[in-house]
Amino acid sequence: MNAALKPLVLIVEDEADIVTLLKYNLEKDGFRVVTATDGEEALLLAGEQTPHIVLLDWMLPLMSGLEVCRQLRRNAKTRDIPIIMLTARGEEGDRVRGLNSGADDYITKPFSPTELVARMRAVLRRASPGMTDETLQFADVTMDLAAHRVRRNGRDIHLGPTEFRLLRHFMQHPGRVFSREQLLDLVWGHDVYVEPRTVDVHIRRLRKAMNEETELDLIRTVRSAGYALDTKSV
Image (cartoon, rainbow, N blue to C red; front, top):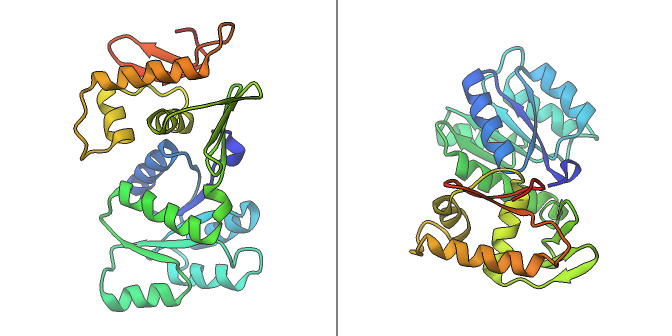
């Protein structure tokens, strides 16, 4: 994905292990990340960079997450930024206080990174519908997710539903190699039983649809490993 199109996440968290976990999972899922370890730094970064969403710990040095949330909501420049609170405080009263301070969602620790990303995307859809109607770009291929349309070098590429999902996944993670098993889980889903070799069939269909005779094959086969979207030679 074009870096300018990736949603920017501000992580406000003073535990280094959690920051590392969040940063890894969010960047893997197509987000840009900036981090702050205390409330004052968070307010400064939010004002300077205007993130698309804030992940905010409750217990912070210098200023609580609740106060950071309140101050973000008071500032005209940051008042509309979606905020998800991350905290070990799971009592109903704490959740109510967090939401009443201006948070859009409230997730208790320990949390599932997959669920967190899903809830972030849900909050972004509600707050900024345009963020989910984005265009993905790689090399000379453009994918319009809202229109469900793919173009290469100005021409339309007609894909079946599975090939579209495959290409979207590759374009969200350019250069990364995925095994057949990973693609089955990520594109087909955990609950669907499909033979791993089925991936090869759909990869061939995707290549056939995308590549004209003189064009570079962007789907790279990595021997004994899987497939990647790449401009390197196959």
